[in-house]
Structure formats: C-alpha cells, structure tokens
Image (cartoon, rainbow, N blue to C red):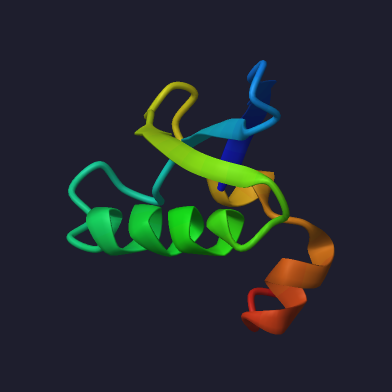
Length: 77
C-alpha cells in the first residue's frame, strides 16, 4: 500500500520520485521485491530519473484499508 508519493522537479528538468509505502506485515520477506517493482514501474513514467522508496510501518496496515473492490477480488466478502 502506498501512503505517499512526492515528485521533486530539478532545475535540469529531471524529476525524482519518493514513495512511502508499507507491507501487510513487518516480517514480509517480499519487501525488497515489492519496493523494486514499484521503483521499476515509476521509472517508466516520463521524465522520472530516480525513485526512492521508503518502507514504513506507521500506521500499520490492516484489512480495513482495503477498498470493497479489493476485498471482493480476494474473496474476503
């Protein structure tokens, strides 16, 4: 889940994205993979030259943060 996205525009015209995101559990072994996937997707956007990802656990993730559509897709209703 992405908590925030900030894009800084440099004088050169390049843009640097900073993404604050969390995982469903602090011990998730896929954290590095998920962060790398997010970086790679964002680097595909025009004029984004660098992406920094920050994994945070405050506030902690819960199922209440999921949309009804996401819950339905995962069979949670």
